[in-house]
Amino acid sequence: MSAALRLCRFDELADPGAQGFSFGSDVMRRDVLLVRQGAQIFAYENACPHQGTPLDFLPDQLLTHDRKHLLCSTHGAIFEIATGYCVRGPCKGKSLRAIPCHVENGFVVIGDES
Image 1: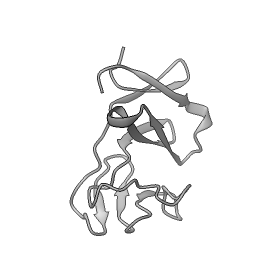
Image 2: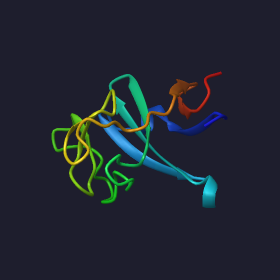
Image 3: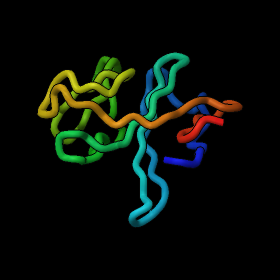
């Protein structure tokens, strides 16, 4: 991603919480998930390394019940929030693809930092 893009207000994300976003269309479509953990924000491509399906195949099912890990609702893979590393499931040892992100003027921005 070369240009910066505002996705949402930081304070709109639950803590801890995760939310999926889609933007663009056709070949330019991008599916991203944001994860908030305290004052930290993480962004990943919303595609499981197992088969490329979105982690939130089931709506609002991006975190485990204890809210300590990301969950792929398709095949049950479990990922560390801070690293995207899969600790359990069919893609154990692989990682989600991280996207640079930061908070700017209260908004979560993905892409190049300014």
